[in-house]
Length: 82
Image (cartoon, rainbow, N blue to C red; front, side, top):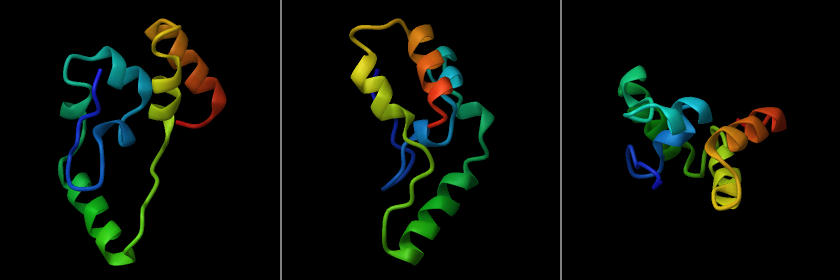
């Protein structure tokens, strides 16, 4: 699975919980008001530095070859990182 860019500096997985992202046909895109992406980008431009919303994607990348999707989601949710 590839990350889905929603604008210059953000990816969809930053705005969606791992269960929804990994288990729904549109990765949860239809559940979000697209203006949220524009607002996050405006904040990024305003502050001139990265803004971190969540970082569960890095855990997914580390485990995707050795665990099932459900196992990964449980690990992420129990880590309090998402």
